[in-house]
Length: 268
Image (cartoon, rainbow, N blue to C red):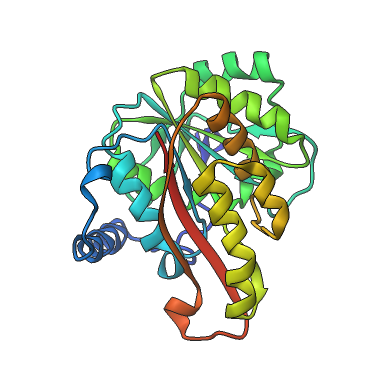
């Protein structure tokens, strides 16, 4: 029944509608990545969590794929995708209470029993309007379907919520070895390229040093609550971090007057 499926709302705009085209695009990102030498010390890292951008694939797909290339080594039984609500204001956090998530390459099962257990512990509600068109989480699903064809997912969208609350949830998720966590966030929006880099540098440095205080020095990430919470959880768990890619929309368009920044990183 259709109501039990989280329909793909942004296929055909943020990413292709056809499975073959999605696969071809991801293969292209993989080939591009193969031309960049990977330093030996990060070659065998298996991340517990990653930060990925959520723009259209032509802008941020390569950056996101850098993280998925590492995350694919994870033997995670379920992947929890956490992103900010763009279209609908609400307080707290909402879980995807559907049976499956639609992607161009087939549905991904949602781990409902795990979500129900999590919801009891962390007061996870259900705001259908927050899920209906949310791209921050949806654009991750074709990557997950490609790299983890047999893994279940949970989609969590946060509205107006306390960073500490989200950090506690991420901590609980990371304590479970069967989980991998994806934090979805773009960086600054609509500054000149120079201004964007200045703002984004504080986001990058905060992640690189796992120091959330640095976020206050100008980071304008649109998923800053998720970034901040991830840094608090990583510090508590004594994880290491590694920045993987940074670019702006100018890399795709050549337009430098008004750009959006994108980063990917991993925690292990």
